[in-house]
Length: 333
Image (cartoon, rainbow, N blue to C red; front, side):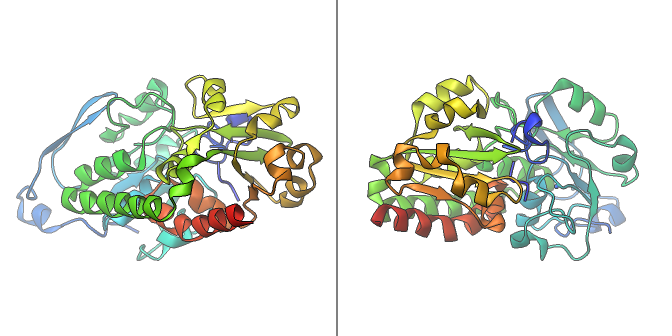
């Protein structure tokens, strides 16, 4: 399982903490009739605002390549099947979570994540490159820009991999001409969060922290990362001391001496790799006050941890199905 820690934690997920605490042709939602008739599809051209400047999309794209964290799942939710997918979470196959894989008619080409292979991407003859949740670097953008129009994060995104699921959905929806469906997806999930907050008012009275463990190293996600954002969207207050430690990043490194910084009213920790027993037997983690009080949740289901880390509307819906009952049960004990 690769649910995400910093590059030095493994470089496998969206930002494995920069990337780990942090992977046949034709978009299923694209309309080939405009190309065959020589006419531009309705609603095009469109201008998409990004942190790198405005990007002009002349016509509905046929060959979409999804390079950013969960860009492929965002496209699939909108009815578009990317021809190439960066497999950030190491799924293999279609390069997306099982909650989204069935939306492909045929498996896409899997592409590199942190260091894009320019030749492999160009061979797909993309009409557009989605890179809406990425490291926000000029270097990466400059590498991709000669291939095809690159749609990066929207203006205002400063934290690496910090594009919210709402921003990503809207950004991709504009690119593929599915703005109305994009707003429906955003509203559906926001309404679900609102309902869950109403059903669980006790969440608002509690602080929470979320961490990961990889190769002997702990780290904590903070708001700006999708995992922390899911919890605050449920009504929890995120532990403010961890936010200060992150200093503008989406995670904070935690040395063995600082694992206790995770202590909050409720803690969620998941392993990156097959090390669940290490967490269950770690005297430092298990000695934290909230752990001794029975308020530590170790996510031992790789699929749930990946859905929790996905940052897409499809993945978040899947995660909520299981993580909310876990939260409720833990607080009842």
